[in-house]
Image (cartoon, rainbow, N blue to C red; front, side, top):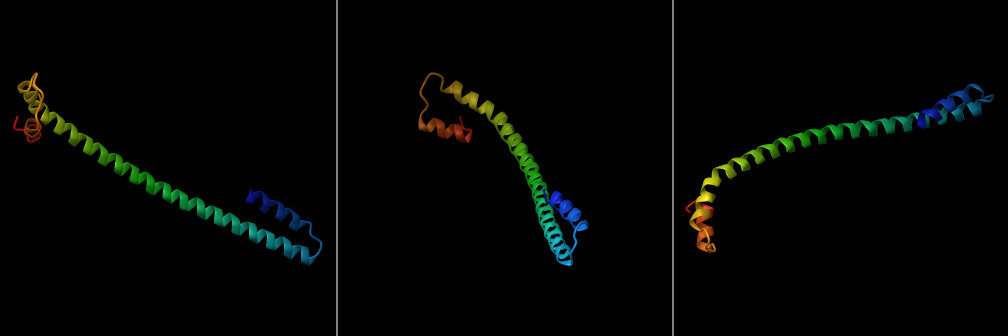
Length: 107
């Protein structure tokens, strides 16, 4: 939008007849250029922010994958203990002592 205004002002600058009109058009061109620079700076800031967020996301995904892998390994290691505890308590309602033993691996 600002680029269009800038082009329009430049075209009008070619058709001015007085010095006052010329200075007014120059002022409008300078203002439009300033607005364009502000918008470009904002775009660059957002692009840098997006890059930072992308890097943070990748880091979080890597951390999640590592934690998921660790949890899966813990589950796999706990599976034999869990099945032993289930076999021992088959049919009976587990007591608080049973759950305490199960959580420490002493089933």
